[in-house]
Length: 149
Image (cartoon, rainbow, N blue to C red):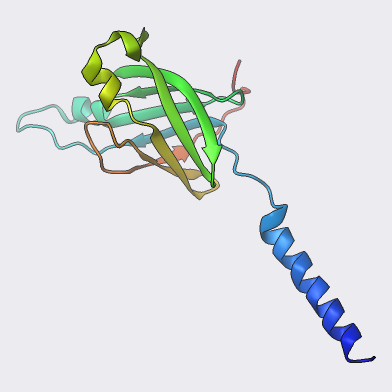
């Protein structure tokens, strides 16, 4: 059956290529420091350097599934999980105080923050419970110091 052999080998080659691209390909490396800026619009007369600093987002994702974030001059920390190619941040503390101790409104506004990879060095952060619901892009920062130290 000479016609069957080429189609079987062709099918195996196609299956191998698909698995190389998706089935067994590398997972996204979330670990590290990520920086971005919300590019806030200041009030007339506001100092541009202060407005720029207020818009900064500094996120550190650690290998053990924890994170630290500095946004709008406020520190947050918590845990994260990955699923379906995205990362989901669950904030546990705000200004080093548990969210659960900051009142019902804080608990209700504490939604999972969604991270979506754009490329290997860029992610998009979306905070559905945040003051600014516009997604922001964060860039991976080079570091010669291992994360978690």
